[in-house]
Image 1 (cartoon, rainbow, N blue to C red):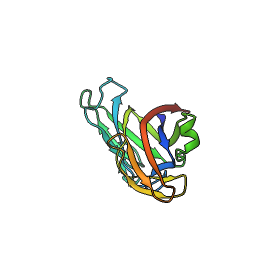
Image 2: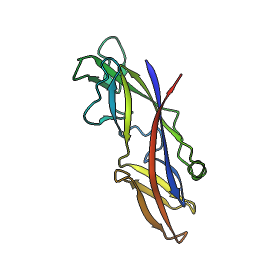
Image 3: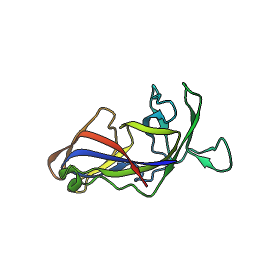
Image 4: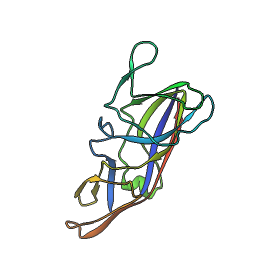
Length: 166
C-alpha cells in the first residue's frame, strides 16, 4: 500500500482559494486520472473517476474502498481509497511563489495514479471577495471579470503532481 498526495498549482490572477466546489473534502467531487498497474506497468487507456462519496466493498476481506479495478493486461485487482483531511485551497501567495497546494490523499494498492485531469466543479474567489462557483477547468483555464474589484480574473497554467507520502 502506497499513499499518493495529489498537489495542484496554477497561475492565479487576482484570485485566491482555488478548491473543489464543496471544499477540499467534497464527497461529490470527481478526481479523474489514469492508473498505472504496479505489477505489469500497463497504463489505463482512459481516465478513472474516483470520489470520496462513492464506496465499494473490498474484493478480499472486510471494509470498503472508493475504487476496485482490474488491470486489463495482467488481470490483477487494484484499489484506490480516498483519504480526506489533507487538502488545502490554492492561495494567491502559493501561486505567486509557484508552490503546489495539497488537494487529496489516495491510498493505492496495485496501482499508481498518474496524469490528473482538471474538470468541472471548482470554486475560487477574487481578492475583493467575489465568489466564482461551478468553475470548469477542463479547458485548461478560466477567465472572468470581477465587477466589485473592477478587474479581470484568470486561472491559467494548471499543473498537478502525485507525491509519495509516508
